[in-house]
Image (tube, rainbow, N blue to C red; front, top):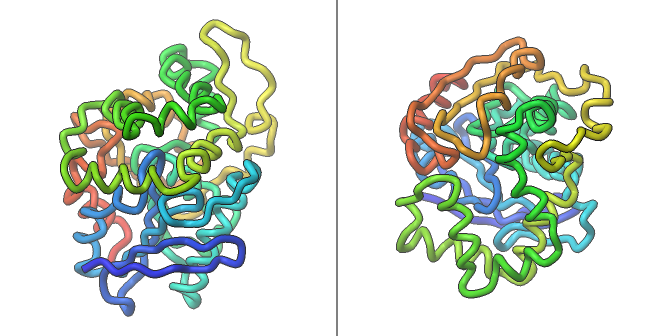
Length: 296
């Protein structure tokens, strides 16, 4: 059974879904774009058999707060939301944290900024910021696959994605791979989340706030604030599991090629034939991978 509550981080109010016994070991799961807490629904229901699973609508999404300032969607602010959740639900011990897509970016930011609060890091088809920026600069296929980021940063995109019953937003999900799971109540839930006042603009502000640079194909890469930073700041010190659907067309293999340089305790589990939407395609198998990794 899934329960819902509002949680005040001190900066924003988050809609939070929980499942499982609150006395069990907690794990926080973070969704990506253009999803909301329900991206983890089937995974969390399975994990809840022996864990306490906490899945927020991240700031800007669904019924959570939607700050107007683009700067409110920078990584440090998003990671602080997770820190507030961790302090509330697991004040006395480090948490396990899982993230998919943009949720993976927030999970990495949390790992960099709050290493003492983290016991295990799980990433499902998401990218480490240094590895992603390098792949965009050095791999022509990844650069081509990432051109959509520039389109999503366009101020006109807000209206385009919401018009006509969010037709283009649905088409975008299905453009990454076939999405037979996006029907009926699931589709209706996404439409409700996207139709919340200000939601689409806030969701897109995550892209506008990101320091990731996506040059045009063939263009010389400019200086990158990520690649010019101290690489030691991007280290994952806890055990790290990467769950990777190898049919992902948005994130190419080059995105994870150097991940071991930043995560000395790294395990990789590949899901053959799974796309970017691995949480929907193989939720029970993903849950079991997480369970084996983080333990009871």
